[in-house]
Length: 564
Image (cartoon, rainbow, N blue to C red; front, top):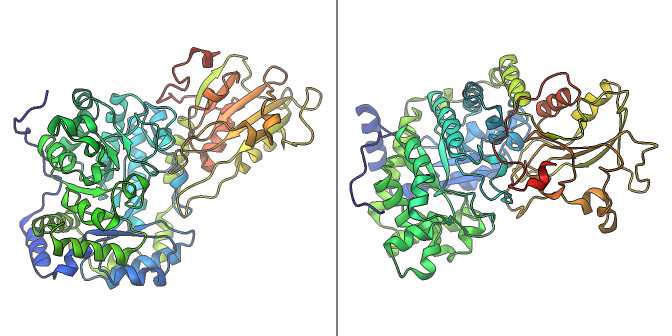
């Protein structure tokens, strides 16, 4: 049932004192219209160069999203240049989700699902504090996370390992602990992807995906998750290119195509549902505006001002910054963007900056000296926390052949069939299974990669080890166990080994690969391929440490066949 009753009081996560409020009002009122429009934008950089930054900084954006390259000195120089060039303190944002999105000079931590598999809120909090502290060393003020989507459609290539799992209670508990620690350490958290993903196995990077729940079902699931976390003070929410037709039709029975409008440009979803019904008083940022779920919905000159007019306070990313800036300014001039929304959005942006204390920091002191940065990253304590979590989450899904633990006498000759996967994100860690190979060799195993021209036999192979490593990633459409790629041809894809040679499947990515290989009798899910996870997984395969991970999802995908 829909209700017109007022929302219960919720805290204002952007509450600031009188001095900070005076700074917000003074700074806003001193801006010309062009500067106010600039504040709406968060542009993205991938090169860590001043040349890349110059045309962006000329537009005086409110924030810069950073995808760092491996050179810490270059990363710092570009960040300092941004700070020194700004009249209003810029906010620095990042997709700081762990796993494949870890940065080379920071401590690599498990991804969201790997954290959930530890099933230990103390570990979750410790990791969140680690991430927040190193993020602040790197200059980040705002993390685009955690993801609070639900793993319902197991074929979803975009939710998967970016989610805390399929159980709402687990998602709530994990997200609550993570957000609290992150924000206590001075980094704004961001709930995504509003109004909730995971029931449509399509990807909003490619299409406008759909939340298919009824209004009542939604309130019992995503409404409860967002409502509780809003009540606990999360500072920001990311509005996504996801439609919620049941809610739109509840207010517009004859909505037609408009029932499938992305939340990013939906006044009903952003203003009425999120702000009025759930009582959210923080900042709403759009998801990346170059994604197909938005670009396929309306023409760009209409889209740009519509994002802000319909409730988002900041506009994320642009493939053509000067053009989109002009579209926003034109939208203001022709009435597609109202002055009241511009004023409200800029006030909220500056308030978030003040809430994070950016107005009080001397620009010269905002970044540590380079040597001090290096000393504060990848500290022994941080490495210990990350290594503990990396191992704690590794999950034994099944071992119906009693294969484990492996030993170098019985299983010495190991054939590796591997698919390393790829990373969508710029600056992500390089990918290989060398840590697994090193750990096996150090224990007396003799691993060799599959020779497509010389098929393994019982006479020359003791065990076959499948290693797959694709984490949830944008634009992949579907993630599955591709035997054509793994075995080298369509014909060889039909050949399967488990009945002839002991076979083990280890996933350093998505937890659902058994759906494509139910004949695998032993399966381990490790969720991400970062080095500590690989090494800790081998320790468990050989019995040096116990399996303690608890699967955050059903790895059998609802099919009994997969259990055997």
